[in-house]
Image (tube, rainbow, N blue to C red):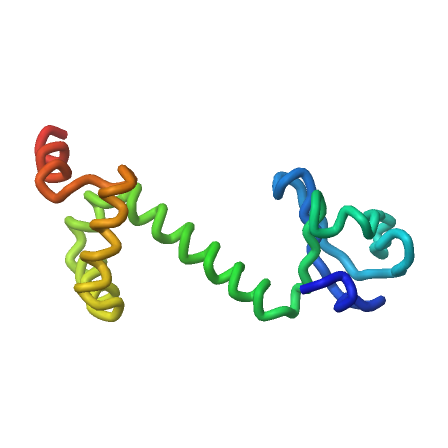
Amino acid sequence: MTISDLLVGDEVIVFTNYGRECVSGVIAALGYCIRLEGGEEFLRRDVGRTVLIAKTDSDDYRLAVKMQRVNSIVSALEYKDKAIAENADLFEAIEKIAGLLGEDVVAKDNERLVSMGAAKERTNYLYHALRR
């Protein structure tokens, strides 16, 4: 999305401070500054540099929201791996997801994660799991 895609009345989310801060609202005015109905103002020249603006009805925004939801679930699953492995219904659901992704894709992605140090090799994982 470019700044020229913005119109008065668009509902947006604005990220500043490298994503640490955000505000959402409706664009009240477009000029030298982008002003939201809540009174927040952002310089046009900063958009794309230190300010990121996204329309909340855009496909990119909706996809990012879904990706965040997936990420939060996967993180929770990773944190609760023993509890999930012990629960037959949850384990079956995880196996179904792996099947939908494709076992070859899961294996290849896991190999990449291992090579980056973001995941453990199977034997190393088993060793640490058994030491718990």
